[in-house]
Amino acid sequence: MRQKIYNSKKLRGRRAMARGFTLIELMVVMAIMIILITIAVSRYDAVVTKAHETTLRSDLTVLRRAIQDYTLDKECGPNSLDDLVTAKYIGAVPVDPITGAKDWVTVEDDVSLSPEQTCNGISDLHSASDGMSPSSNTAYSSW
Image (cartoon, rainbow, N blue to C red; front, top):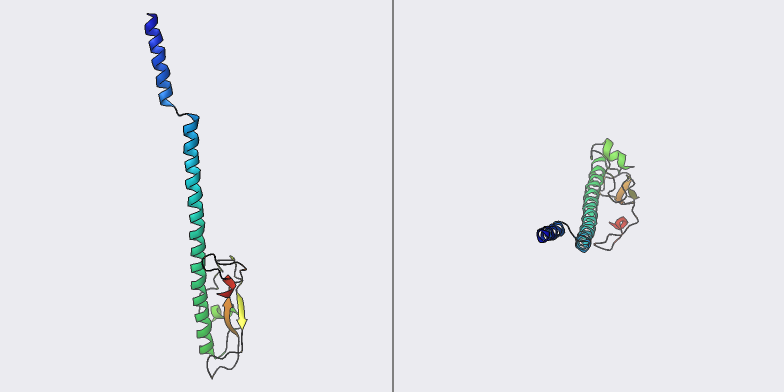
């Protein structure tokens, strides 16, 4: 009878150990999870930066085209970006994706796009960001 009791306790102890995880196993799993999360976060940041850069390039292209069309149609450059909205060349002034605000830096030159142009106004614009693009190592304000 004693042997049966001893064997059944021994079996219960083995089963209990087989059901749980050791501290080492849990630490290894946690370390692997931390490594994978770190890799995912760094890749996510790179994708977000690339998306902001693509949006900036697109917005600059659209706004520059609208300035050019406005200047050729009105024979005078716009005085502000709001003139482009008022004249319906664009729906709204977009937010600079890098700075998160409508703080575009406008450039006014004495450049005429046609001989009929009577006055000058905004001829170009740039981002107001002081940041650098990690992919091309150029300042966003120079785009």
